[in-house]
Length: 127
Image (tube, rainbow, N blue to C red; front, side, top):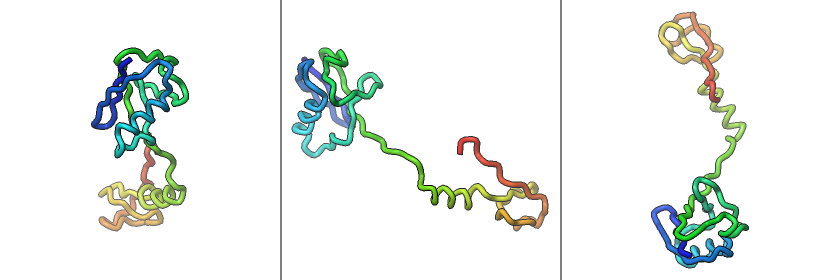
């Protein structure tokens, strides 16, 4: 059967059987695209990530099906020291109610208008 694999900027047509695993498809793509990074990408079919160990028949992939080869996006949590540093300089502030200037947390007077009506900066709902 004919299988179409789309990646970033490239489309490849491969012949495969329903008993082929996705790792064998990946090996064929490595042979076709020598300079293309295929190892750090994953197969997606209809918005669903496919397991590399299963075969094409397990997913009912038929004639002229389109597999998307998308890069893995590694994400994670910021380092705690960077979070504390950002919170100290961006979130832990006093805001002047008169001129809306940002002042240090221990300020009693606004540095711009010398007003004494300061409030603590509101934290974001999403942080």
